[in-house]
Amino acid sequence: MVKGTDYSLARRAVLRDLRAGRVSRNDVCDAHPELLRAARNIGERVGKNCPVCRSKDLFYVSYVYGDRLRAANGRALSQPGELDELARKHAEFDCYVVEVCTKCRWNHLGRRELHGTRT
Ligand SMILES: [Zn+2]
Image (tube, rainbow, N blue to C red):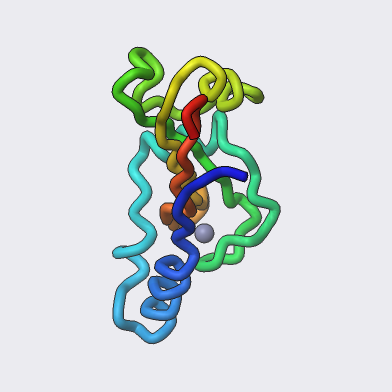
């Protein structure tokens, strides 16, 4: 069981605002080129359609943050098993999982997980 925060409520609220016209598509489909590149190259397919454009090109990209991660701090995970390896070596760090669509550039923070030997 991984400790963390689930942002699905916030995600639903954004999508509701989009449908109601309270926010524009440009406001929510603004993924940074770096994030789009990460999604294409190392993203993990969500296996669901994009909530905005219905494309199947919906990915999860995981970023790890922690003072003690040194070189890995702020990096996107690119290898299978990388998270487990970091979790064995480090006391505590955060993993942010971002959902991103490479078609329409929709992106939203999915969840924040706390990992490491101390958790
Ligand atoms: Zn999309």
